[in-house]
Length: 95
Image (cartoon, rainbow, N blue to C red; front, side, top):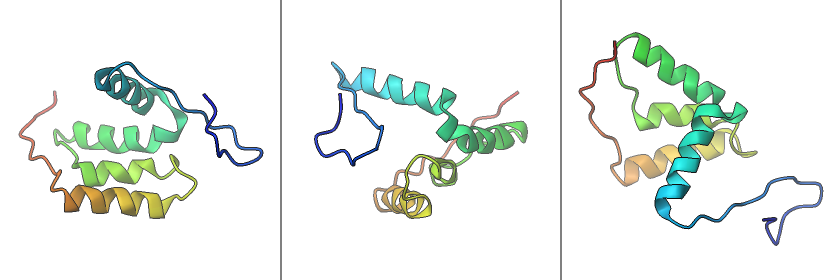
């Protein structure tokens, strides 16, 4: 659906979901396929190649192309991660 207050000439749309699970699955699909998330996937791949898990704060750097706000958007996401203590300690090794 088209947002009610979408700026003239803008193309973004929003989608509604029947459940939170569907919403998260769709977002994960976008992260793994969308052009705006290429940098995120590259960052993730670099860490995995070294057998390490990147932090959420590090991966947020890969969201720079997601918003027209660019770096200020990334900074806000990273601040939310820190404020809400969303850093997860992983002990995962990739082959």
